[in-house]
Image (cartoon, rainbow, N blue to C red; front, side, top):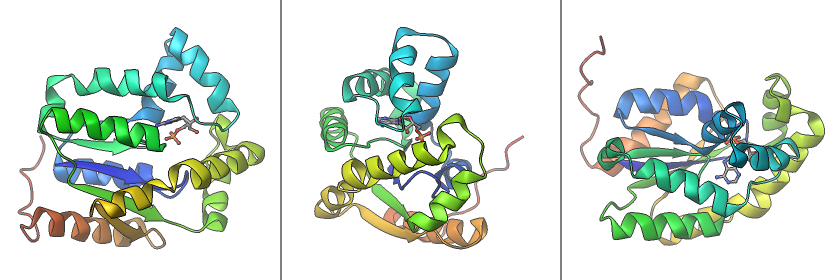
Length: 197
Ligand code: AMP
């Protein structure tokens, strides 16, 4: 399965994607994680990206697309992928569509985790990441609403969007996600995967 996880920073995407990955056993493509590891590895892309990230702004599309393109070439991605924090702009969404289409690997589902701004600000303030300072949070939310949220229309038009209410306990939210995923797979509730050793 190939799916996209959309939602503002602090909506709980991190927690929920961990669960979803365990459930679906597909590779995790988190551009935020990739960028943080590029920064830690002191690569030129990392240095460039850090300027934008520390200001709460989106990293330019070419950097993101090169990174994701390289990751998608790895053999494990043939089986599926959970795109987390990507795409974040229409340009990225179109580039992903082109790539997936030309490889005969269509998207199955786009999950939008919906949480009001007040809840997001409260959650992020307790997290302690360097881009979780109040002024940076405000900028990240602005970037989300102006550049990323429009993707919900883009994916609604393609019949791929499912909106999930992100308010509730992690278990409650995951139950909603699982229902949306199972419905899309058309297989009803899935047999539990073999336990990992
Ligand atoms: P995240 O961990 O997904 O919240 O991402 C942290 C930061 O990395 C964001 O605030 C952006 O500056 C940058 N970033 C992550 N993914 C993308 C993306 N797909 N496009 C542009 N910037 C991104």
